[in-house]
Image (cartoon, rainbow, N blue to C red; front, side, top):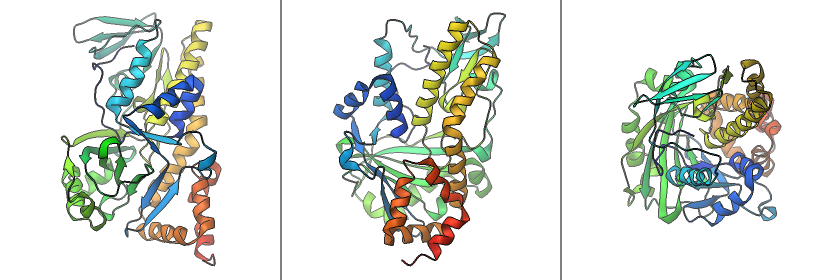
Length: 381
């Protein structure tokens, strides 16, 4: 295991862990979830609040049956804490050799696999590389030949604040779909000790076409947006705002080849609508581990066998990513978004349908069906 950083280290992120992340932990070791519940750097998250462009909120729990759950369906935890938590787990495994502060910069194919070199010209050779080196993956560019495309790429800006008013008592994350930020959103995610992860994300092609300065827009929203500025009246910025690229999973890509698999942001798997990356990254890592075991057993590291990894990832995620891409484009129609939120707040059946969509991908597919909105339009309430 080779990492360019020395842990603990920060990573620009929204810091929210979804049910998909917990799904992976249950399969790996369910005690990890128990540790997260007790961890003072994490808080429970029971739902999401969507705020329409006209300022009307829609509060949606992640689960309809809260009383039946042992733990919350999600957590919020700073990446500097969460990644170090996982890193310590890896360090406890005697089979894992760890190299921190080691940035692999160049990769070349050899007769036996792939060689990687760091800045000191040290060589790491392997028959199988699992590349999880993030949104600006050198491996994905040099070996997998992947390129970022503005339509399928987003820029996110994140800052930590203290004393933001009216953070949700149940850890609901907030997504504010503000006119000037469409087709992106402004977010507020509560954290322990009165802190909040605050940020904004907009698709790269929209930033370019509208000539938007993301940092300027971020502070403009905090200082002048009606539903935001009062909550930040006494808020204190805790560090510098930080900007990073978010490669979206709105396009299907080749995730493996001879002697390698791509995971997480290196595989460009971020949800186009919610911006979620952690859950998809953990799922891809789980599938990569399962495929690596098969490759080792068969002593076969060719693209022919590794393509099964692509199939596993997209069988689990592609339908969801496609739906999120459709929902991302729906945000370009703010009047429709306003209407759905207004209707959901007044129609219990519609609100429960939206709630169910977090647990059932087939129900979520209704969101891109015009008949769904036709029924809303002519429903009695």
